[in-house]
Length: 339
Image (cartoon, one colour):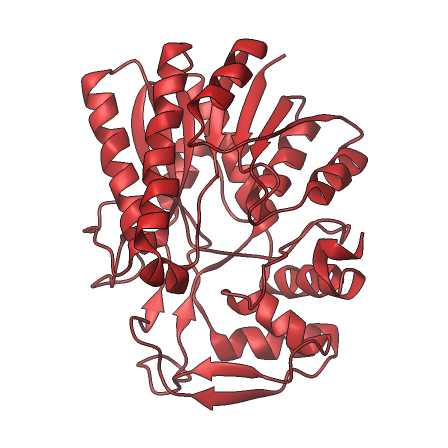
């Protein structure tokens, strides 16, 4: 029975991955400081899976706490989600982001090495491509960052590459997510942002449920089919399945591979709003606002490598994404704080 440590296991993507791993027969240990997550998520994961999560409260920067976990459990691999992820906040609090994301990862890897656990799936981001010159974006595209959040992910990628160069017996998957959306089809677990949502889908859902008056669409003069920004939205359940495939791949391969997790299809902001309204039969009032600094016109994945290496591809449709997002929001209008 393989034990998998999920740092940030109670978060949005972590909780969905915990569910996928439990259903696949793994033992799951969640290590989370709950700065942007809830213990309720893990309780619901347990109910859905009919299996227990070993839940530990702790911070990845706390080496002593990590040592205790690695001494206590025969961990086979780590899926590293723990990280701060708000672009805007990162520009105001860069030191906090570098300390948590970069220093925390270095501490984690040091403890892993000491305990001879050298299989790691790292939660990276399409932000490492900066303002890509062409789309779709392949893993070989030039990397850059336009904000401290993206820079922290890029720094960690370089650190992991250097680690494998020095110690070739590591097996690392760097998964570059595009735009995760949706929720488990039960409506029991989903995205529960602190305060103002940073991402489009929870904002649309909060407008639809009446928590917010209207959606601001930033810019309608981009060089896209309707003038609004185009992104690659991927259902979080597909994303969780990608982590399962990555773990299976690591069991047979050493070295480091960066892999896009996206659908390869771009949808505009207006496409998302219209699909949400149509599929769920609910109004989403919106207004057009000026462009935001740093936003790019179009960003979507070239997903072939994930299929070729992991035998993974996104299966959920846009209709699935908006339907599952609305079910979660409707059943949990205040997120996990209902519980």
